[in-house]
Length: 466
Image (cartoon, rainbow, N blue to C red; front, side, top):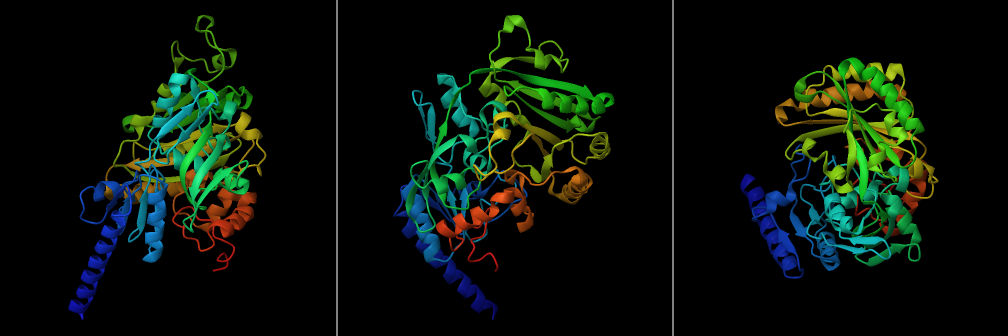
């Protein structure tokens, strides 16, 4: 019996290898199978907890390669995953036995300074985009860590330093070129398939594979930015000050707060601010920033791209990651007590809790105007646990879950989809809130068979009861 099973397995591997070679002859990119040079590197994602082995990795050079990869997966009844930057904490970019469409080679950025747009490939990182737009004194709102993949960030929302003045990343998406589940090419824009553009603005990877994005750009070059740090004895007052500051700051300012224990020592509270309005260095800080009582030179003029890369070293490669998140609209003493109590027994010094402000332009968008529904002033509260040793997984995951349970009474409805791990359909529904049913109808139109299901999945109406 065993020899028969082994014989079937060998035959299946030969068949798969032959099929992969045939696919490789049809595309401009590269096809990697287990054992091939580069396979192990290509299958890796940001979260080192994820260790999955696809049957084939299609490193796409363009839309035609995506079409061929989808056709290959359909012909062999294999699941499809899509990797842009591979930074989703759930690791949905890779599946055992599937076909990974690796978009990372598609990293072209084309800036149109007259139209103030940037057209970018799906393998572009935030740093790639900033590097190309900076010479023109332009930028679009993105996230907080420059090596993050832009595609996944934009498709899920995109909350960062410019959200108060210019909205979310998805709010600035003006067009996208897409390959559908049927292998057809489509354009999503205000003029062509506007329903698909609506879904692309926060609906994740549920409706097809984006092969090109076009973003609106804004005049942004130098910003006033920096960090104000408070020791453990001032932690409570710092959290209260942050909430007061965030509730009164103008659109030009966006702020974030983090709680950490550097090197496993005492608690530190850090408030980071970005002021993207006009300023004259000779006149000192604008009045709103003075409310933080920063040390001299703590908040200084800097290129926007410098701020975007400032947090990168806090997320080294090869770390195990487990995240939980939700939204807060208030910071009161009871919440502060929970945060401080859990921080004193945080198991990994690399972990922390962050509160990212969403306000201003991002908050004023109608919740139904994009697939991303979470508008109004709020904080994205993220418990970001990371640690290097896999043997420490149980205690780090346990601590994260216990803290999240402690925060539940204070959390508002909803969750930011880009922070979701493997948390089940109810949490996906919370991520899309009142827009879920409309998204399910859109899914039914563009992917009725749910080919693109290895994501934070919105099931088509035809399978929603299954």
